[in-house]
Length: 246
Image (tube, rainbow, N blue to C red):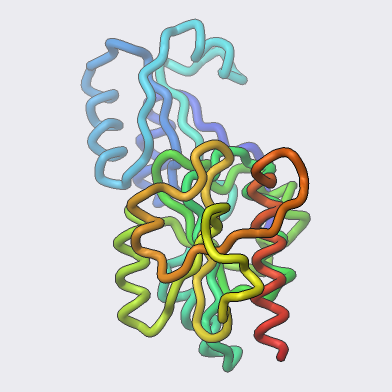
């Protein structure tokens, strides 16, 4: 499985991409454009939960690689997404309690790629990301993952809070990174667990945090109050790994 820059330009090209089953993450549409093909694209975007942004022509011209965008540019996932059930099956196939990463609002593709790499190396069974307000599986993410996307599944869901509730019914429990939480070394992180990591600026959102069973704080001795999202994910993930090895 390789990766390329998945930019799709032109109205018909975007419509055909949807019809062929491609996963479209984001669509940029010329502000004010409401003709037939654009309305068709908007309907498909709503049906498939693609993020739509209306932008001025200057922005589209800057983004375009061909100069023939026709008022529409879309970005497709560089890799296919899995279903959440496939992540659980991976755990079952390996005879292990599920260990999943759930990422709440990671917008930096380098952070997402680094977290996916860490998740694979830590033995996680998959990564779950939201459809909105987060970066998808772009070529930059694939490159930054250093090949990990070939070996670990990533699922994309409409609502993280709902997904957590559904997974709790299957016996999982959840811990989120929170600097106001309990020191991570004092928490029991064994068993079927989901590690929730928040975005670079806001951290874990209030609604998602309320669904978590525990909040884990990383001890910090410096004068700044947080770590990079991918670093925090690595620190917490390997405390989970340590406890699973005991």
